[in-house]
Length: 137
Image: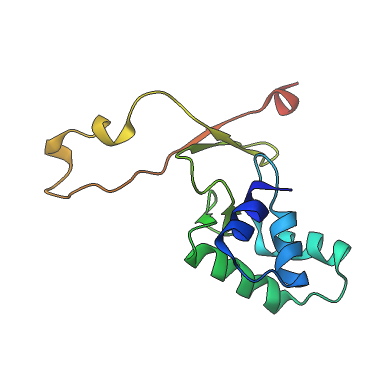
């Protein structure tokens, strides 16, 4: 069982067949799918699932704090089920693969007071970009 599915069961979230399939599709490490990719994978498991149901379920999971929405290319929103462990993303500019990374250090403290313009910081999102070994070969 995926971590997401387990968390949803522990919360007592009503798991219809459609919701369960969406949660299963989002299970695993380094999952960063668009809504259309979630829908395509969900249809393979449950052919009658609608695009609207997938979008609604993704929205509910974001509202619950079980998914994080982000974009690396300023176009397609991606959904990350690794919502409970702080991390950043590593993006291959060749093939588009995205990996979760956990660098040491504290990016919040890297911004000096003089560069905060009086803001009280609550978080930071970093995307490291490069070329993966497969694309570099």
